[in-house]
Image (cartoon, rainbow, N blue to C red; front, side, top):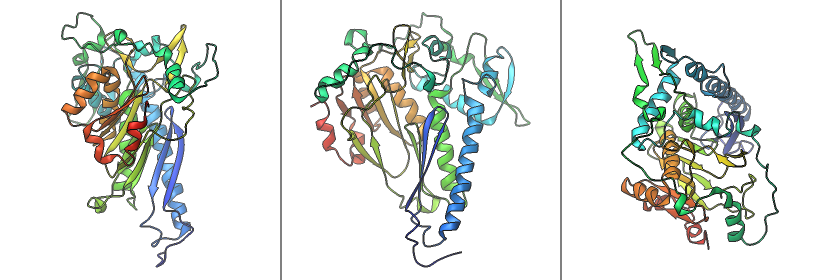
Length: 385
């Protein structure tokens, strides 16, 4: 049924909210061009079917990539080393991408860090990990003092910075032999992977970004209505642009949230540190602030430095990176945290990458390439003031 007048009962923006793959997921759909063509009943039906599709895809990917489920495809691969094993096209593609970025990030972002993650206490899904096993005092005082106190346990002084990149890899760790992983596609289309013994994979460093792009491309290119959309998977965001809107895409506003305190709460002030405007591509944030837990008498986090096989000590608290796709943005955001402020900013500027970093003193820094995307640049000078 088509109508000539817009239906005031149909919102211009519809949001689907889900919890899956260890993160909060939000799919935002721009309905502007539909409310003059379809009835509310038709639109509600399509949204319900799309929600069901998204839920099914997420459930499928969780069974493929989860490291917390021994029956997942990834964990079956980890348990069957020293042999060629048939894998799904999805696992093959994500692993191939992960291997590609190892050399792009000087070996710092690598999929072979499952054992160090488990050693740091990340053996179970994040929501089940202990967050406050130490005595906690109420947070008081000014923005600067409370922020400084909240990050005191990160051990991020300059002399502890884990950012030295060396060419002499004397430590004989499996993660430094990424080339030992072999991938092949047979003439019959079958995908196979050879994982050497002593190596175990964790693809969480890139799989959320890959999934976000898959959903965004389906909604904007494959779905019958080809809707403009923004898919947010735990801070890794992909923008879907229908082919017939490439010349005039919808502009989305993306808020860069303030980092978290050690107790998992935001800073007292409600405003975001920056607002970005994006019409296509992707943005991702990575950091030491949120995915943290208490283990063996200290705070741990999920960003492992491969040279030391432990959570990195870095003066970058969070990094937000813009890229053409979410997987790239996700990997480069992690890379910036692992590099540290000085090296990260130099690398970002060298490659003309738009990014925003917040250091452990809660000072925000941006690259010149992000200027055109900032809606409220006044926030930049106010952070850390």
